Length: 81
Image 1 (cartoon, rainbow, N blue to C red):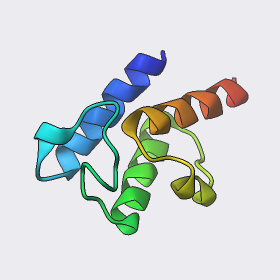
Image 2: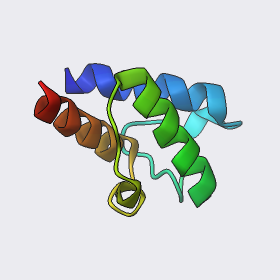
Image 3: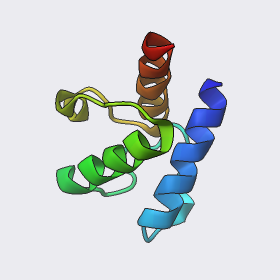
Image 4: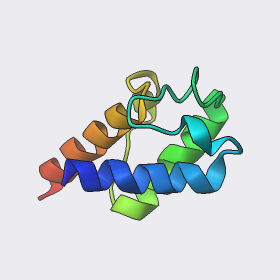
């Protein structure tokens, strides 16, 4: 399930960043994908809609990579279930 979540996050990012060549599970949102904090918030908002979870706003400081975003969403989905 976690791999499926990460795959969907990659799809979200692919539709919202210009350079898709750097999108890998271990890619840093800020460093590798060159997203600013507002863009990260927008991506997290799209993830909330996609996965039906509420991501705490403080999470922007807790996640750096695509995989970490996937792990956060997975843990939120497990809590809801």
